[in-house]
Image (tube, rainbow, N blue to C red; front, side, top):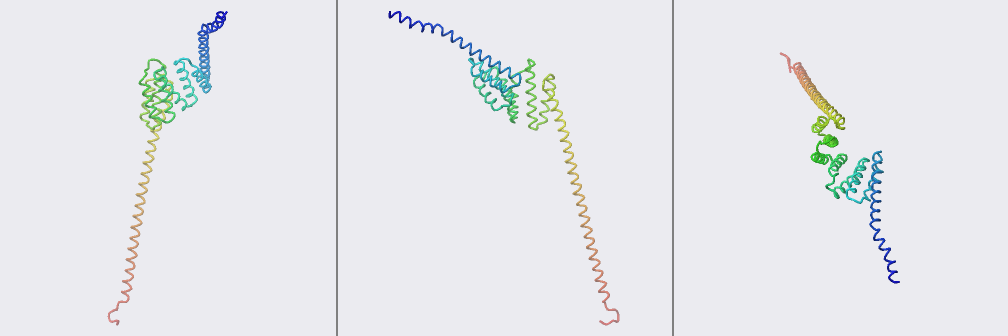
Length: 266
C-alpha cells in the first residue's frame, strides 16, 4: 500500500520531467515568434516613415531576443530609426553599445559610416572626415550598393570641407563623385555644390575688385585732399606775404612823407 502511494507521488514528477523539454521548446518558439513579429512590425513602420514607432518595435524585439545575432540586428535597426527622426544623441549611445557587444559584427562597417554622418550633422567635421576615410578604406565598388555608399562618403567629405570653408578641397571631392560615380544618387547634389563654389569664387573676385576700387578711390581722394590742403596753404602764405609787403610799403610811404625836405627845418 505504501509502495503504491509512492508510485502515485512519483508519477507526476516523472511526467513533468518528460514534458519539460517540450514546454521549454514551446516557450522558445513562442519567444522567437514574438521577436519575429516585433521585428517585422518595426520594418513595416520604418517603410512608411513612422520612424519613432519603428524604433519602439525594434527595441522590444531587441529586449526579447534569444540570440546575439538577433539582438545585434534589432539594435542596428533601432539606430537607423533614431537617425531617421534625428535623435542623434540616442543613436550615438546605441552605436557605442553595438560596438561594445559585437565589435566584429556585419554591421560594424556601416556603423562607422553612420557615426561619421552624425558627427558631420553635429558640426564635428574633422572627426567626420576621418571616419568617412576609414569607411572608404574598408570597402570597394564591387556592387552598386557599395559604390553608391562610397560615392556618398566622398560627397559627405566634400560637405565637411565645404562647411570648413575649404572650397578648393571640397571641389575636388564633388568632381570625383561626378567623374567616378555617374550613376550615384549624389550626382545632382555634387553638381549643385560645384556651381555654388564657382559662384563663391566669382563673388570673392568681385569683392576683391570692389575692395581694391574702394581703396584706390580713398587713395585718390586722400591725394586730392592733400593737393587742396597744399594749395590752400600756399595761397594763405602768399596772401600773408602780400599783406606783409603791403604793410611794409605803407610804412615806408608814411615815413617818406615825414622826411624833411631840403631847406625845411626839423
